Image 1 (tube, rainbow, N blue to C red):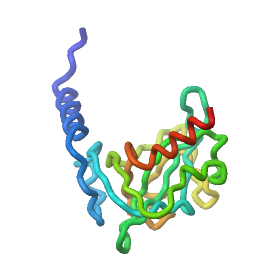
Image 2: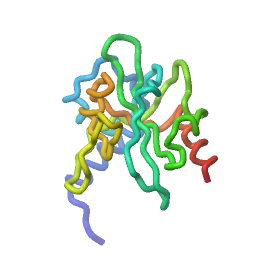
Image 3: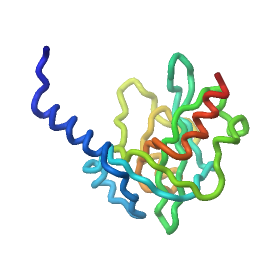
Length: 172
């Protein structure tokens, strides 16, 4: 058996603690420098999904299938309170919104998920081309700027994600 270093044990305990706590309401204004202290913390917030500003990140493989991560800004009440929501994976066949209308809820929705630190780009990933709507990795700063959002990333875990799961299952 290989012993786990003390720092790894502490890291695992920290993230486990954040995952089991009840979700926090996400403040309207978030200091991006504080996100690292809340990485993997469960949060919830309410707003309206801006499907007109949806971004697809890909290609992304899942169980041998090509597809995309769906990122949709969530417009909340008040100026400058919009955040980015990673709503999950879809098959390449469902790239067009017209092919997955049931996954595009209208009106007010509540999103529950994990607050996450921005991803790091690796050397092999091409640069995003937001002007062409092409995203190969989630550059949170870049995506926030393109959509007028705060540079805040929520990985959705409950709520509206069920619509995407239904779309994925319907595609199988």
